[in-house]
Length: 498
Ligand SMILES: *Cc1c(COP(=O)(O)O)cnc(C)c1O
Image (cartoon, rainbow, N blue to C red):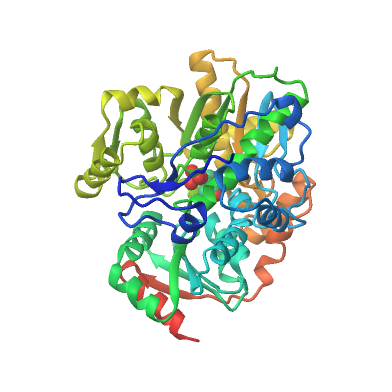
């Protein structure tokens, strides 16, 4: 008696898709994002769940959100995603340092949390294509603020019937991040730097999705577009799993009682990671507060305080570059939930954002925001936090994690809320050694970033992770740069090369 779950657009058209169809399409006809039309509670005693491995838990939860996939299909996807690419078979371990619980999501091949979903998405997509008898090749279009690009390239490289195109802001990613991407092998990969910021890249990609003529042309040469960004629901679903897993970790180790509520503090950019926590709550995870942490690009902090989303502000490049975003795509999915599934309302808010650069939600929706707390911090405070946590517990956070940690500590001080809190750790410190060196001063010789990685490895007494080892010695394969107006031409050129 399987209750069927379908996916529909946040913007109110009547499309009702299976999860396989939604994953292939990436984005809805009306420009909206696909969302589940209902959520089921997990309904299993946590005493039973607590002994499941990460993969077993993933199967259980993903089955609920992807009901049209068979158990066999899902098992295969999970086995392929979470294999020895990850440096621990706990996949997403939670560690306690300085009295804070860090959920470490960076044990995958590219050292950032994007691996949690992007090591899975190619398998979900491949399965979905087979299930729906789709004979076209898929072109995965991706805009990246630094980490998604590499994780997507790594996941899709040489996957048959797919091609992957990544656009990154030429001046908006770290040197290590850029080098990870431009050295990517695989005959189906294509990486382009654009003269612009992440929002430009993301807007460009969204416009290409919405360009009917362009999509028809691609169809004629047997291609369809899909997305590896968190606008694709296939990105969000695997992310729901680790919130349950972390909670069960705390329960198993006696840190919390059964049913005890926890808070989660999430370093937020495109609102995908924190939204997965929100979905986890809808499926029965006892979460009290969602602490949404931003850097100086604090559009979400203001939104959570006032209910006004206003992107008419300066864009800053910070030392947590994966969060340098002013248009958080997945907030649209939260708006959908806050409005009680009112697609027309979401549609008009999104139209206002597009036309005027801002919108304000009504009182009912504002009430729904009560479970959220928004805070932000700047680079100097972020680095201070890295230093103080290191001094206290010899644990090094990357800059994104530190933003969340700092905002959490401030929240705790301000509110006195003693609820146990999971701080989501989204990247390895090895990815951001320049900022870490500013904070910890582990070497005087900071001339190049690759040297810094080596010096940090000695200082922290941990080997350089495989994902960035010898990065400076790898051949640069992708050196294309374009203006944001040329993105479509670039894709065409790449596809015609064959
Ligand atoms: C992508 C990213 C984030 C932001 O996650 P969203 O799901 O976009 O909110 C935070 N930290 C790191 C290291 C990231 O790569």
